[in-house]
Length: 321
Figure 1 (cartoon, rainbow, N blue to C red):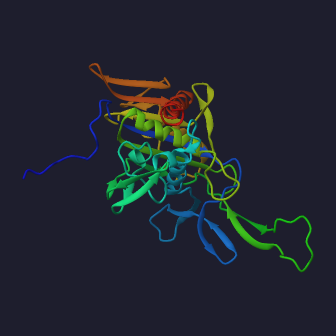
Figure 2: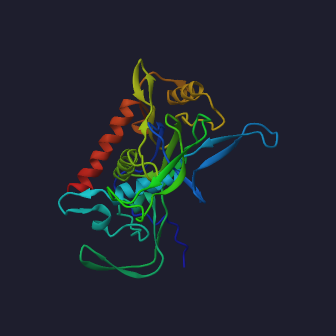
């Protein structure tokens, strides 16, 4: 018997590309990203960055874990509201956490991956379905998340009060606890990479990326914003989107060893405007080979418009019916 060599992905008419999203996000308020729980102290996640070969010479920095961002993005898709059916997208597809559907035509599993560990029966919108053991590897990976500044976490006293307006001393008393928070105004360089996806598959990624910005963080408060700086003589978000067959653009990835905000922003912007070894002065750059597009980059407001247009495509296809 001949060996079958195939990815397992269905053949589609639409072309496949690699996609990248690069951004710098800012926390406008304190945020909590849990690391571990100790007695009476909730700690934020930190990383240690070596700055020299000397043992013990390192920087401690706050951190937004890429796996935490991935989880928030995936739930943004699972909880997206399907208008005509009055349900959430995950319910209409029979896809959730921990039970994913792992189907190539699922807009969630197609890029985030899924796993059905054994043959099982599920009920989707009142209809029973049989599913076989299936593995769907994710084609979206997340990176970055190390804060630029070295501001350590702040610790604050909190109290869990019973939900009563007046209570006697014999009633439940507040339970005090302390929690660490990432301080406001920390900047986090982040990036997402998509492997061999179609434009409609990337639409799910764009929707999840934008929708998750308001929900990053554990507990409350939540939410981050795309940081803005001067690009092409006006304030624009520090955002870059690439679609390519070959990676011609310089990657706007900031070294975690950098602690100076100006140096980090300058490096990001300089990389964003370098394509195929040349300095460019446009916010939308395309490189062709013959009549075929091999690389395209969107920067700043143009990149935001690109993600918003793709998000609208996702909503039109899967949420509006």
